[in-house]
Figure 1: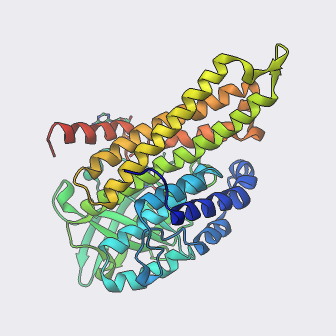
Figure 2 (figure 1 turned 45 degrees about the horizontal axis):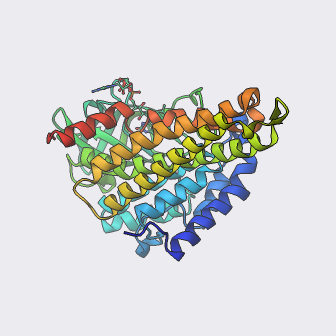
Length: 380
Ligand SMILES: Cc1cc2nc3c(=O)[nH]c(=O)nc-3n(C[C@H](O)[C@H](O)[C@H](O)COP(=O)(O)OP(=O)(O)OC[C@H]3O[C@@H](n4cnc5c(N)ncnc54)[C@H](O)[C@@H]3O)c2cc1C
């Protein structure tokens, strides 16, 4: 086993790090303060192949692996975790279409996603069902060659700005087997959006409710067969969870780098605070946590790439562990900045706020423990 990256992987990582440093990081605090969603910057990232990272190349995708995706999202998140996370969600939606769509759907729907001329949102959560996603109530009633979708989705990232929504809705019985997945386009009559939610972090991307009132969706826009929607939604989340973890890792790495520089400049008691061994030890622990998080994230990504039967468990483990440890590293970086860490200009409090939600979404970290415990106890 060799943990070194190939030359190609190093080049991809460097490209994404450079993009984050030049195009994202200089604006990140401002976008956060202004609650600005930088669509043009997203399109510039797409032009470098970052909107279809693991989409097959016959439709113009970049054709890389989940391991590559983890590296790219981590690198983007060194500029801004909220932006990297939206890129992650967009890639997850594109990946679901690539993997479960028909040839016709792939050729029709993917090209505008790959340029980010059309952004994509993932619509699973509802007001009455988050962790218990299989209890969703949005209904899709077949009428001739179409379905009529009625219900509400909650907390949808990118909603109102995205042009394409992958909506999980009930076509049959209660529980996961009665759910199907649909591609809904933004201009569909009956589709409306709530106000942009006021949140703790992730200000650089909008979060809105999505309301569906008899929205007509043609059969050609159903992803997979009837009843396959929950499986498709969960399969998308395996990779999505790796990317959310990667976004935590990039954010925490950036907070760590800021703290490392700060302790060498800031003076107290006649010396640089970085000369206090207590702070050196804290930095040593933070650096170790980042390395462990990265190594395990890559391990889970390789398992997903290899279609390892343990991949779902490993992705859940990685999501829980990496997002928890990285939140803690970012919070420690804030502490090392003293009072200045609490000020917006230093960019560290923003990272802490952004990373907090990674412990909640794409399955809370309690639900990650549920997935892991079921797997190790041999239960479905
Ligand atoms: C900013 C933001 C963006 C989001 N983006 C999207 C998106 O794009 N698309 C989308 O579909 N969703 C999105 N979500 C929704 C997110 O995935 C849900 O909030 C999350 O799954 C939790 O659901 P809930 O909020 O209903 O909490 P609940 O399910 O009500 O959970 C409340 C608490 O109970 C715990 N809990 C629940 N069940 C169990 C159990 N069995 N064992 C132990 N503990 C349990 C949870 O871990 C949590 O701590 C987003 C959320 C936020 C905040």
